[in-house]
Image 1: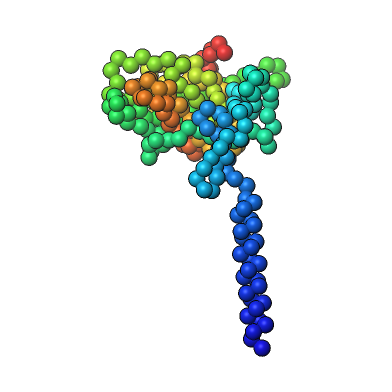
Image 2 (image 1 turned 90 degrees about the vertical axis):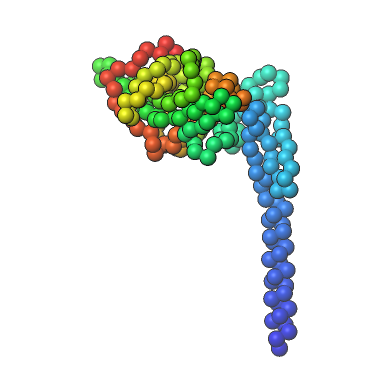
Amino acid sequence: MAQPKFQALACLACALVATLAFTAANAEPRRAVADDGREVILKDNGEWQYVTDDVFATTPEGQRIRLTPDHRWEKARDSDAPAYQPVPISTLQRDNIRIPASDVEVVLDQVLIENQRETFAKNSRVRSNLVLYLAISGAEATTLSPQDFVVQDSRGKQYPVFLVEQGKAPIGGQQRWLLRAQGAPRWWGVKFFSLQIAAGTFGNPEQIELRKPMRDVESNEVTDLPDDNL
């Protein structure tokens, strides 16, 4: 009497194995975006391939766009455009890095959102800046410009840097470099801010990236913001 029960269990096990095999075979492959903006498929066997020759990019307003090989562009729907993939971080600590080639250490001390509220008759608007403070040690006679930096959030929206100057950080009043970028996001959906530093800025052979999580970012109301002329 036990034999039919054993056969039933065996059939159930075979069906389960077949189901798992079918699921694995038909699983959606993982996708990523290469540093050049081209979408790739990552296969379970360790291989990869480009999806198309199209390149995806993000406008300063956060709109995802498709760049085709014939030098045309078009808006991409969220379902079509792969998610923004920040460049890999080569340091264990997300907000600082030491560059062996030049023995320079760069620390992203603090990120602030400064908001200025303006009222016109019955209407009001908010102007915002992102303010980043950098501690730089080991670099002598450093000359920095806005073109050396890219600021963007975890959703891929960029904020143009228009001012780089030496100043004092809010923390401890110590000497820091101040970077000011135009605009700021609303709090929803942003996990961190990314500061990308161009290759060669501090003797770094490649682009490097520092991050500050949103939980460490403060928002302040100010009476005036500098004229960014952008």
